[in-house]
Image (cartoon, rainbow, N blue to C red; front, top):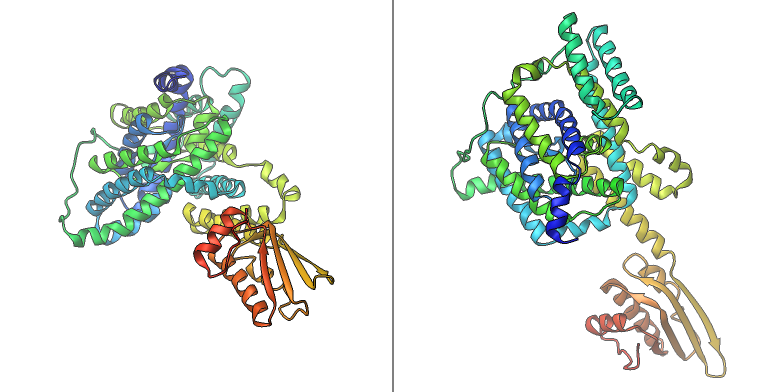
Length: 489
């Protein structure tokens, strides 16, 4: 399939389900975006405008069809400190710079770093996010009357029960309509969307950040812009990987990086806050059949339609309906099989997953949790590989030669284990170090070999290296004074 044909299929290959699922994604966006706007210290309309712009732009420019993007909590946490210290105008400037940095990251192919994120970290990421999504609903269920609990229960019954009867219309949309009608007819004391904050009453328009164009301004916004860019890319890449797994398809992570940068630049120009992929809303979109770019576009376009053209109606939607939807999203996002896997997976893999969950839930910072998970994965891997180095020795009395056969990967974590295997006070006058089954990876490994040879030679022992592979021989020849035999292969 040609690029143009594939792009057309991504837009129009699943029109009905994409439109309906995108509408579900819109309602899943509303409470989260408003809540994240308060976290960032900006008006709800700033986050809602941002979600509209990001979804529409990235539907065209992104590399992962079916993924919903908007004003996310992880970016809001970074932005909050900047808004408190310098105001919204500096946030808009930082958003523009963050978008430019994300485009640069795509150009430099930094998305390839995602290869170092293990499956255990990805599982921890989605589980932590599911917990955060659910915990974000708890304030809406505290200090309320029984009517709220009854409405949430009715909403969940509709969401999970209607698909057993028919699936032409996504059950969350039915849930919203039914609960809105019930609340209006019975005049039940339920909180509505209008109670969450002021909704937009006009279309977004182009703005330019009102900040002085000086190096002092750049000095202020650069650290925040870099953090926003990194967190946004990380969450989008993680979300894209989850979508890849759920749909058994591949996405262009590099295109997603560039597309997110373009979207955030557009957001900054329309007075919004930077955003990224939102896994909870994306899972909801996928659950109800959204697979293409059209679902992403509809999620943003329908949001603007609701906020501006249908604002009075949206204001009457009970928060309980949105809470029911987000509880469903939370349950769908959580990897329930990972609980069973705790008994069967290696202890280190389970520890990485649990550590990722714990850090994210404790800090509400997805980037911090993923970073901890990646570091732990690297440490456990390095420890495991370092223990696989073996050095066997054999003495040939006829030639007065001891041969050391080395097998395994020699690098910074295994270099001490390697050097400890040699008896530098050996009575043999000749030593052969057979390296045919070994590989040297870094200068620490080269230094360890150099140290072993130097110690043996100080005791009058002639040392011969044999069997070096070409890559190891090149590394040793470049970074040490050891003589590498020309016959090494």
